[in-house]
Length: 95
Image (cartoon, rainbow, N blue to C red; front, top):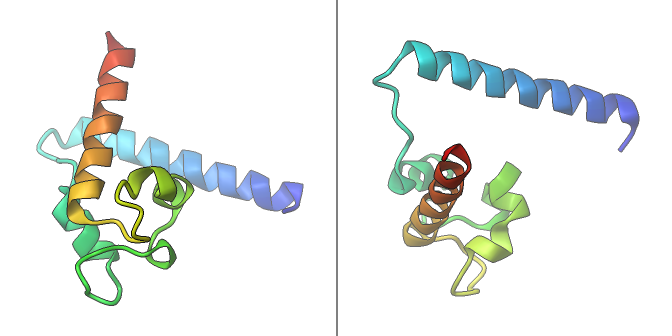
């Protein structure tokens, strides 16, 4: 990957981060999607689970860690567990 592409990717990521912060701050009713909603949105073949091809970002980079039963797919239960784990880490940092 070249530097220009990395810079663009970083800028886009920061843009989404700031946009998410802005939207959350201005819409207190905005909620984090449930694991079921996430799987439904990303599940391209509609089999009720996520393959590595169907995910990107932190799901892709942490796929092996999230796939606790090591079957090569992420279930709603595994996605929920990952969400809860991430929430606990963020909560600890804020204390």
